[in-house]
Length: 333
Ligand code: AQP
Image 1: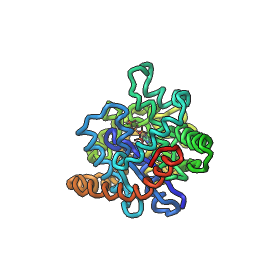
Image 2: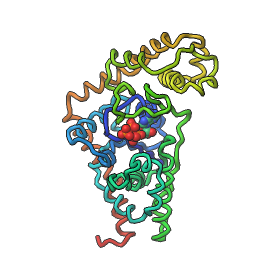
Image 3: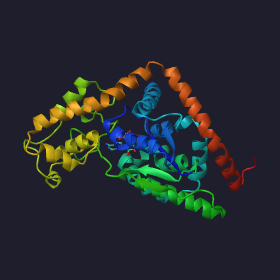
Image 4: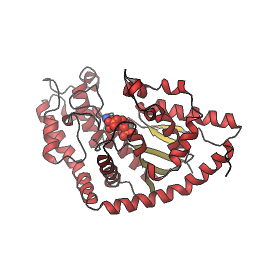
């Protein structure tokens, strides 16, 4: 069966960007039933930059609660925390020996995140894409839903699979296909429409957290950076107004309509009113999720049981694939 894998880092609380750009889509893929779906909290990826241990534990459980509240069903999908399925890290080591330094050095995410001070970045941050390749290939995943920002890493996953197969003269790892999300929503910062909304942005007002209450959401939307012009007739006119475009896109994604349809209804309106509508819509759509998340978070032991069960199911797939990989590579078993 075609199989999908995707993950989210527990590197902070979930944002509206993670929800509209990733989770909502994960749920649709699960519900469509065309793929076997595996979704992950990638805690090993999160620690490529410093994470406070208590915060990491809390964020991992909260991310699990977020998946469940958004509609991931742990029976129909496999829901796991990365470090609880040790084959991810074990296969990543093999891939560290397959991938080339030059490939990693060309990754734009590495260049962005390490910045000018690459000497001080962790070795894990550099090797991040090899672990991601392992996440995907340890399940022989055939399809990965990717946003623009992850295209290059999936390309590298394909290169690693190709080189492994070639070096060992096998047809073992599949060449995973990207599933490009239709009209994928890229949610931008509420303080800067040219920067992506991010859980690790130090400014809380830049993002809507899935755990924000109605007041917090309304306040952040009201204070979102915009210009004084009314809403235009056509989306083309939003090109030059990234902050306004971002709010229109968020509205459209929450309402499940095209951005143009939002303008057809609201063109000419003042932004103050539009922000009020947007806040109402965001609260209506997110309140059930945040309520369910808080309910789930009252019983962390139940979350941990669910994750243990997920890991058990995942390992039915990963243990044989890792075993076979070790054999191919020449490890005595
Ligand atoms: N602003 C966004 N708009 C649309 N999609 C987004 N994603 C993240 N931010 C947006 C999608 O969420 C998934 C999980 O991403 P991740 O946790 O692996 O890390 P990220 O992309 O780096 O997300 P953050 O929130 O910005 O985390 P930090 O701050 O830790 O780097 C991915 O599918 C991503 O596309």
